[in-house]
Image (cartoon, rainbow, N blue to C red; front, side, top):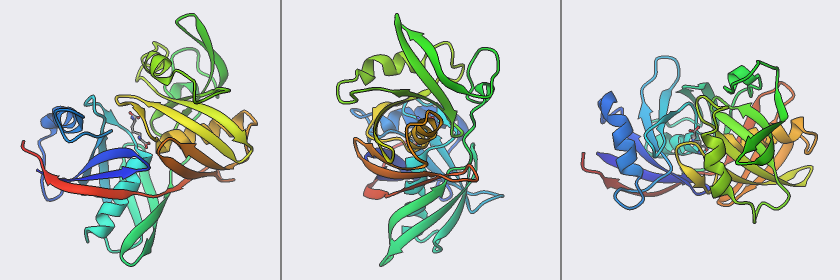
Length: 279
Ligand SMILES: N[C@@H](CCC[C@H](N)C(=O)O)C(=O)O
């Protein structure tokens, strides 16, 4: 199977053109586990499939390294856009992509036939407890709610960007034990579909630093949906304005939560290499 290794600020993906190479549905979880394996495979934070769509220009499916399918992937969809443009599938700079989190509209900024950055309309965040989804009596928002993890209390804000996110504000992000608490919160019984976890240090009303523990992947260098969720939570907690520069270990994303409630994400995407994977 032909694949292209790509990344969006260090969140790395194996992109497969499944229009030209159809893959049996039943193989997908195992294929994702094998391809994403850092020692026995290509290595990646996810497998991204480019598929035909009846309702948009293309359809994207994204599988985590543990084989689970995610509803949406912010860094992945920018790689998707770069691939279809630069590989000649879609010569226009506007693109509609069908995902499990709805149809996303993308605008590509290009120079000399190359994509420099991609602006994605990530849609409206969902805040209702049942929409995260989170167990317990339904409420309009989960805002600074205490969550007990191994005797430690975290105040969490929950945001769905199509996929679930929990946002926790910390004072010192560099020293925070992400790999200790990330998996405990990801698999906490409060989240029936598990959750991504975003640890945020606020620098100023327009800048935050984010470290992310991803559902089905572990700590990654960046998470696009996570950056959107972190900004929504920062605004809801009166910590930032609605236009924020998000610093992640792999690079920066610009996030805007518009007046009409849509979240816009802007950032780069890169191709690293191409190859063949035996299946
Ligand atoms: N890295 C992604 C999110 C990928 C999916 C996530 N692990 C999940 O299971 O929801 C991003 O950039 O948004």
